[in-house]
Amino acid sequence: MTPLAYLALVLALGISAQWLAWRLKLPSILILLAFGFGLSLTTGASIDDYLVGETGTETLLAVVGFFVAIILFEGGLTLKFSELREAGAPVVRLCTLGVAISFALISVATGLIFGWDWRVAALLGAILVVTGPTVVGPLLRVIKPVRKITSIVKWEGIVIDPIGAILAVLVFQVAIAGGVQSASGAIFLALGKTILVGIVIAVALAKLIEFLLKRHLIPDFLESVSLLAVVAVAFAASNAIQAESGLLTATVLGITLANQKSVSVREILEFKENLRVLIISVLFIVLSGRISPSELHAVALPSLGLLVVLILLVRPASVFLANLGSKSVNYRERTFLAALAPRGIVAAAVTSVFAIELNHAADHGELPAFIATQADQLVPVVVIIIIGTVLVYGVIATPLAQSLGLAVKDASGVLFAGADNWTRKIAKALLEDGHSVMLLDTRYENVAAARMEGLHAIRANILSEYAEENLEFPGISQLVAGTSNDEVNSLATREFAHIFGKANVWQITPNDKEKHHSTTVASHRRGRICFSEEPTFLNLQNLARQNAVVKKTLLTEIFTLEHFHTNYGEDAVILFLHDEDKGLRPAAADLDSVPTGTTIYALVRPD
Image 1 (cartoon, rainbow, N blue to C red):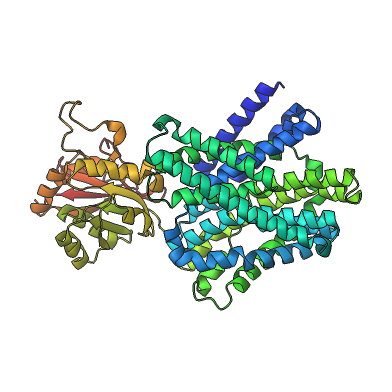
Image 2 (image 1 turned 90 degrees about the horizontal axis):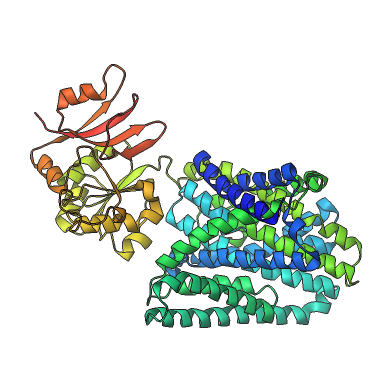
């Protein structure tokens, strides 16, 4: 197989795995690893076949390291200091005391289970303290826990990755020096240099980027790629000054940019999110393809033993002991945190790097020769740990969060932009059937009326920073923008598309639907148009003033959609559909048929 064919196949399989994971609602990492193993087994090809000597392997690891830096930079762009009001203390405890406890327990367990030298066991202990945004993020999107838990898990997953890499560097230096006492000076020097280099370079570059963007010295079409180049330079420069400090630099750079107020980085974040999906897809397939089935089989049983220890002992102990005496998280929250620590691409990438480093040290006589044999087993062990933790936590996390009251079981609720009379009628009908609803409106009289009717209504602008960053949306997965302002509705769907997804952001039919295209908002700048018969705001408001009511009807083979229209008239507006498979969702404007077994909510005239 030619290099071009191999790379094309890797890319095609990676994107196919992501799509398949989306369709099957499975963690993408599992399908990516399966595709990587399958590609290697069926074609006999791996990335190593196209690398030349040691230089090729080192180039691959450098590329992998840079890709991981991009992932952590993108993760840092999602971290807001405002989230730390509730999550700050638990995050600090988990990333300090939690890391120390995890490192100690994993190192001891690894030495006992595998019988490895303390240097290799401690190195694996350092690497496995990480969790990672590549697997935590997708799990959170499925679980949909409360905002506080989401913030804790997200911050921990991103911040702890460079900590794990730095800890691995310190352990490696101790291993080379022959002990902690011999390397104590080097350890403190390396740690100080890493923190200093990471923070200084990151903050300086962030301020430079902010200055350039604020004064529009970088054209729009170069913003995203310029930042990509900056991340590359920051990562390389940091690693050149202090080994493995680049990941810390990339993370701090992302966090600093995310929390400055001068310029928006939303477009840059969207670009990096797309790039992250591509990087993860390629990396998992390439790295898993380097491992043979015989290597996995050789370490399978002890790896499963270590997996059990990680899940049942290490994670619970680190969470509960780190938060001992803390009032920031209650018992239910600690229990959930103790049941969510999947490992991802950062663990795999860092392990690949240090497995090579241990081999080099053994070849040059800096470590005993048997260390090389044990180092060769590190990568397959970590791959099994990744698969195991993603499988276990992917299965137990959602039902556990729901049973602990930290996530809503039915997450198909609706956020309404606007709280006018017709909106309140619809929201009340949905609420009475157990569906989560929330209404946002800037007018006090609308909010007060909604609250009087028992609805969860908040006085806030749907386009405000407060609405996006401070409000929780428990059990809500879709938006219906129904204000009297068509432009606000269109902007709201664009702003909330990254929260709910483009398929789940809707707006009512604009008032200018019949006007010339030169005076209407472009269709690609709008959300999906909802409600049958395409009613505008005025149409819906008039129906409400005429005392129209919301009718709930189950369609069967005997009572079909045609019978419904015969009973309630052709002008009855079908608002929402609900069935067991797809849950609750708004009816599309072009609705022409509804399958049997579907419950419809419609706004009909009282006569």
